[in-house]
Length: 466
Ligand SMILES: *Cc1c(COP(=O)(O)O)cnc(C)c1O
Image (cartoon, rainbow, N blue to C red; front, side, top):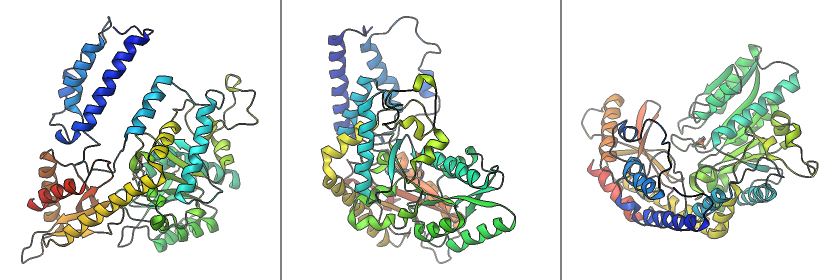
């Protein structure tokens, strides 16, 4: 047992864990990206009930190595190209260690003044880095899903206050390519009407289709309450036309939420700032540093124009929470769903300072370069076709058999599903698939610190060999 008040024993074990992490980061490329385990394998090795007596740290670490480790997917592996990255980096890991050591709980300014003030400062740094106008103020949420739910709840309350009525007639709009968290958030926020708007040839929201849907709803006596525009869809990194969507929202008095969870981070590059065109019209924006900015999960940057709207929907007042300085400070518990809050700003501070803005820009530029390089390899091979542009480190493609008769989409869909499962079974790479307008596509998403051109070439060779 590790007596919890013995600092020297703790020190020794903490050094051991630090060594373990350093070895892990060094050896990561040697492990299979995904474990070869059947459902239940790990569960069977965990006792059915908790031990009555304490277990030595030695024994716990040994079991971690033997039971847990073989069941892990290595998200930081250089061959991990699945979903979008969930990143980490040495400064982020170190900050997270400190946060765990402190055991901070940052619900109010007074429960840890430094946490609130560092969070305010980091959100201001990020706002400037992303080129967002000064009217935006930020707060850190756990995930983009939560941020979108928060946005939809504030939209609902704003519409209901304006109309003095119930939510029954309010409508939310987002493209059919919006992240699953959007319809889920709308449902959770109590909206009875959620419209899935068709997309154009680039998989971006069709503005005429949005206009048509709103007009039909107006005719039916319903009221547009919110539109979620996606900058970088999860399927194919499509960019919705935020500027015209914003003009429609203004006309309709609807809340505009911009979901830029993955791609938004790229706006720290001056040459990619166009991504945020129109975002100045937004009421709220979410960008995930935990996806592509080297901050470990979880950390979502949520920007709003009117923090008062957050306080009206999420404000709290209980005697136990009252502080002498409440009039002078921000209490982030009133800016979101949770009462208790983690100290997430520290890892942003460590990461941004350690790499510097230029270091982060260089990393993103390298991923974007690699994405374009990979797209070039796909384009040069007749047995493959590619979808969309490849400007955001994510490439969608599929294998097309070169036969005389055009194979049908269903045949190609199963061909590509099989190709994907063969690739992932190698343990050298991990990619995910997506369905776009009836076509199954394989998707390669870059974003890890460890992926080099040599790794990417190995991935392409595996894919091309098929
Ligand atoms: C990943 C993603 C989300 C969900 O992000 P979480 O932080 O995991 O909730 C939402 N929207 C888009 C566009 C995404 O790519």
